[in-house]
Image (tube, rainbow, N blue to C red; front, side, top):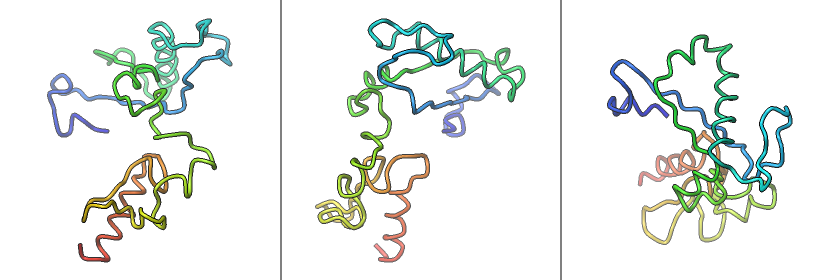
Length: 157
């Protein structure tokens, strides 16, 4: 997102927000493939682990964004446990509204051709269900909203 575009008070004058979303982080940490970050024995996220992962992401950005570290005036990181704590619908910090696997798609999510959800409809007239939990699923593309917009433009609703 670009929150400063609509609310300049979210950053210092003349500044901006860099938002990096790492959606594939596990709920439980078993280890670090690079062997650089110690995994907690219980596998649960904690502040030290969250900041170590954030430091790694920031370091990986530095080669393509030279001087990034010197320009940062503040940083706030959220791990899966933080996300779940902020929103009970993000079970395990999962931003996808459920597991993204074949057994969790098609008829197991409301979709455009499904009975009771045809065209993303709800029982309330002109109220539509869109978002990561609906067909075609999660992601940044806004696919379900696009499908509803197509429907509305064709129907004149």
